[in-house]
Length: 202
Image 1: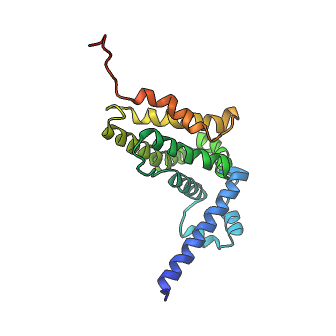
Image 2: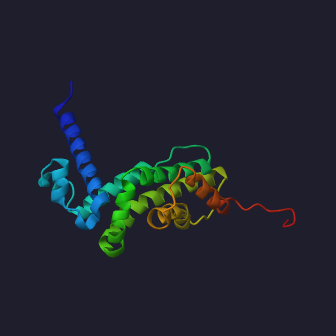
């Protein structure tokens, strides 16, 4: 028998999913600047007060959508191979940015992130930090296996891995195809490998 608390929790999850879905759709069309809580409420079929109980502003709503996106791209399982794990991490980002509304959402947010310092700071603290933490976790796995050298610059590695993805999304227009993740990782990974001494060096 389902408890009342269980039913309430399920309703709350469905309501939250509807709100985030409506926010994603509106962000993809108009960006943060034109986003309104009223518009989200109408599209989600909920009252404005329902939204305000969870998020204080439209900016918090936009960030909630991005956090939800990033959380689906992180937490790569143990694959016993750093190359495979880094490719899996990148493929998650490429799939979501290239095959779902999130690519349009990110393009819609780009100008706001460049001009709104509070939104940009929150984005770094709540979104970028999640992915940066996962890159660090995967690199440490590689160090523990002896596949990656000690002392790798995690922040720069993160930028080298994800930079080409966002360059294509925002600027070049080149496709986010299924082979891109492996090509990026194979370009970056040699710089992360342990240094081996040659016979001449000895």
